[in-house]
Image 1 (cartoon, helix red, strand yellow):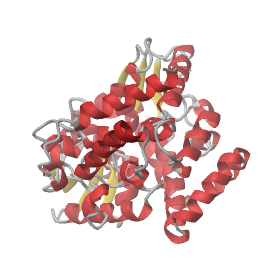
Image 2 (tube, rainbow, N blue to C red):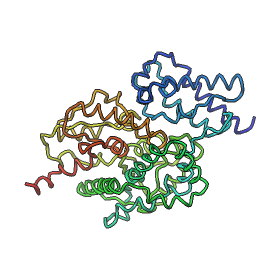
Image 3 (cartoon, rainbow, N blue to C red):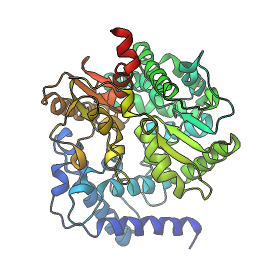
Image 4 (cartoon, rainbow, N blue to C red):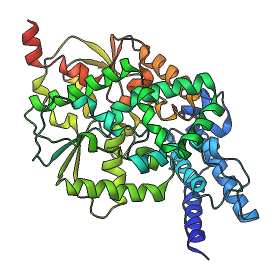
Length: 425
């Protein structure tokens, strides 16, 4: 048995462990965002993904190879983990999708290459340029003219997440208008000619870019006003590798995780201040299991802000909870608690452990599906009848930003600092 076949065997064991407890009750389908948004295509739903996993195991045991086409079922999963919250048997269809994607990317068990070309391009560019679109230098533009503490062991780590929303929006529109085939062919071409990624900087929505940069400046100001000292990597700042992990490229992610850890150690970082849920979740709950010396303290920037710094108002707002905060690890509710200290917060009926995803993680691979999910979530949020919808995630913000009622939490907070209110008065 070769090393690769041992690796494949371990993947199948992981898959079997996850799907075998399923009792096919269908509770997971009641909370899965992708199932109704796909028009109830069974394989694009939580129970369907578990069933696909079971069929994959049967094919391997009977034929030695997977003939079933499984890519759409697993790649369309949002990894929101809502299914896990309602499953009486503790089955996580999101985890099944993660294992399924890893089986696809390994290329050892499927009868044909089922790798998604767009996913493959993202991973290739990230491994080469430390950024999914090869625009790492551009992503540092928001910090021009700002002062950082070069000797601080506290690192403000944006992970390029806010900055990339201006590009995701444009590329998502191309996928919707030109079609899936065009997007995949373009991705294949860019993978072969990665040097052309330097032109990606022109594929951005300038209005969104200005808005996202302003949110990062808000975060900078909120931390500075709280007396926090921190450094920043500027053009050297890499993407955290979230896509690499989420798309099933485990071998590549192991390599990338080591690169990140070595970089942080080289820069003498002790505390990493994250600004988005995906990066916070990855560094807090995932990355430590890939490298033995990940000894950094990972915090969310909101943990460094004091409730007394903000004026209580009569605002009535709705808060959209990011999946990667409330459904991962032990759950993280600091944004909600901070908002509740300032305003009256109304929650949509799908919240807490049953939160409904914004659909953002599907934007690049399945634009129409992502749009359908975001429309449904936006409708749920609007039903509360409040004046504003606040979120703490740039991906959620980008996907739900359908009118001027949607606002990033950094913008809401900075306009309600006591000093700002005094200036207005």
